[in-house]
Amino acid sequence: MKKIFTHTLLLIVSLLLVSCMSKTPEHRFFLLSATATPQTAENGAEPLAVSISTVTLPEYLNQKEMVLRLPSGELKKTGVFWGQDFKEDIRTVVTENLGVLLGTDKAIVKGDSKPVRLRLKFHEFAEVGQGKLVMRGVCVCEIAGEFRQFSFSGSRICKETPESRVQAHNQLLADLSVQIADFLRK
Image 1 (cartoon, rainbow, N blue to C red):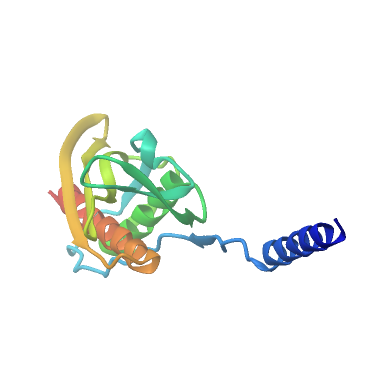
Image 2: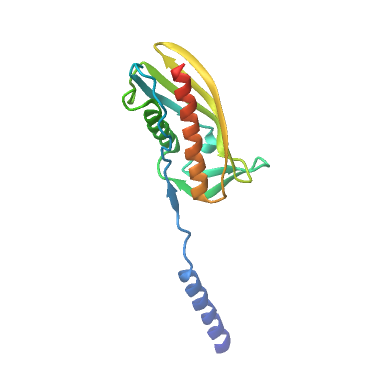
């Protein structure tokens, strides 16, 4: 009896030691960053006030955790977290990119300023497997009370690391910003 008790006690102590020594996984948080590079602004162009009024994402992407969409259609959480609300991060980065692309002396980028208000509706903005990140959606521009829209899309290949995935998101948002700037210059 004493032998069974000793073995049981030893087993319990061993399990407690192992469970105390194991680490909980470290959470990693990332923010998106503006990466657009300046383009030549048109001489004599009037200053342009631009604001992004709304950013819409599919519900499965509107998460604190980065989500992958596997080729089978399955959604998979990555264990990597956005440092702030994903929609707000997108709005901030596209706004900063537009300020760079339109030239600081040619663009005044503020919250609800006029005459140009943008609405970004993403249909897709996620990795779809094998390191391919896809972005697709519609941009609605309200310019002096008139509505115009265009579809946007893009893809980037990235390594299957959090840093590479975030960089691919940044690059796609820079690509989107170039598409918006080109559309506004027309």
